Length: 341
Image (cartoon, rainbow, N blue to C red; front, side):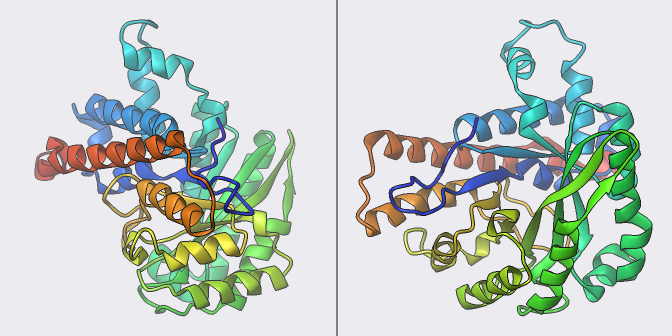
């Protein structure tokens, strides 16, 4: 299901949403939860979030960490279809088209061995030398030579894979500040997007890069500078996805940063319904409901007609995200970290 969050009447390019809620969930969970009695509780909550993100929030794709893919398949694959609504939902879900599997480069062999049906993968990589040392614990060139490149060759040997590379702290950075040099990021992204790795059973290409606002503070002017620099390096605008911080959202009806995203033709954003960051040393991602609410203000400001159906859809999305956040804050697993960590 492909859903345009921003109606075409007001925007040249409809926004497509990558739901990263499960990435935030996996980051916030206590250690060793996968081997604890809490695994099924995690899987049930995760499936509720996936389903709600698709039906209520119109997510185009869902980012699912490899650990949660494990939990979901272990919980639902052995159950008889029809045992309950969640089993039916899992059985009917277009998982292999909807899911993008979020894995560390070193876990790519495990992904191929355990879940060969999934052909869309997201790998993290540093955007520059400082981010590489601070976030990955390796020199920049060393990380690409020893981790990312071998992972791409492994994927290529296993078949035809499409890869998204999430460039950590590529717009703002906790260590480098609010003005990460855009030419360096653009050159890194251009090299990734231009490579198609041949393999024994197919190929692996990087079809998209995610530019991340690591900490709040990105300005519309600096975002424009970063995107124009990327374009000057030959990066197609449709190969860029933005991961913006929720703290950068001002008035939801007058969001200058999202307005800049739309006017520059960016078509994809990463968002979340879970009130937690996806990575350590970063801020919480933009909320899916923030995007829906913004879309109404955008169309109203530009003379677009907002239908009753669109208003109802936005209300449903806002209620859904509020329910997820409330359930998250009350989730017992998050208050028992010392018991299973």
